Image (cartoon, rainbow, N blue to C red; front, side, top):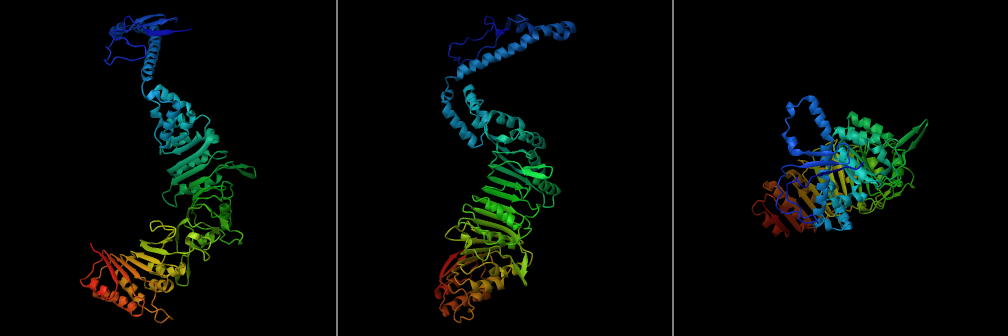
Length: 581
């Protein structure tokens, strides 16, 4: 049965529309004194005048009369509201049809919307501009594939509008209510899931998403990042989540275990979840990040098997406490990773790191970042050799030309550079060594743990009052190609120790000083107000000039220099550069 509900034009007292194309005069319309609502072709045919309704004294009407009055008129009133809204919407469409925004071709609009999506700008706001924009956006299901979850209702709208397209889900809510509700949406969405990124959440949030993925095949999943924050390594929840993570993608049928199908996976980042080491998920990856210090230890062979199955790996990050069986496989386990640009190894003992790297063939552009601690000792000397003895297959660190040494609290940091590959702002190797012994012992062992035979530039900064006498002696003895020495913020005793070693003749080559190729010294933030330190500097310069290996260039930057020192150095043939505060 049809029904027409329109306001009566004879009693709708406002300005009339002046043109058929929908243009409305700029003067605001007058508010109508009354509106007649007429129903045609319905059981409740009739006319209601709103002006009369406003005059009713409803509180004084008997309940029975009020009940009948409302029943007779309520349907008509509610339907009239809908009809009036439809008329208003149509009028707005007519008005907007000739605006510049509505004249944009749909193809161009789609390109514009794609630009908004690429920059993570809310597309829903664009659909509220006009009817045409909304229809174009809703007709393009590819625009709704990036689902940034801040609330469930909006996420559901995006998933619905994406229709059969693959979707990329980025979770950004910390609400447990949102976590629980949205994690239930993953099961029906699994067959369309291309990306799932949950970062910065706590361990319990990660566990919800992990549980939602149990036993589910995800044939199109390319990126899985489940990164949860943990208060400490002893966090009980983190340990539980890590153990439960071994069930991810796993299905158990009686005594048989199978793994869910995820052949498209390329980027895998997990913390604190630890997958089973036996899963075939570790295959064909380009990004592999496992920060699972609570996970059971894999063998060195299993780690190498995983890397062998990922020949296109571009980024590797492993945070493991140790290898279970650090036995060295035979020489056939030489794995080439030509695309690897970043290798980060955390918590592994130095010998475990060296054992893994000894079987890799990596390009010169690979950067290394290693976090470890002193593991063993060679007699009284700490051992932290993280690089294998044979580094010919590690092109970036085969020869180290520049080393920067710093002590930051209880961490010894070494930045190693290769001038032909990286600038001084981008070290090819960063080693962060947690000190278990005295800093003096760790520094003294540096030449035993790093090959400095090709070293050309040495930067030593902020040793926290450590003089490192043994380090200077050993490193200068081995670094015969050293050309430039830069000392930053060292104590007077440490600087004096350097000058003493540089004027010592090398045994058994009498007449040759330590570092015979050294020509440039740069001193930064060093005070020369002590006369004995000035004497050590001048004695070093004079001795090296006397035996035929003079210093050619000396930079004094932000140093406290006494009057006459520069003139004395100039008289000894040294080129001086001074930059005082």
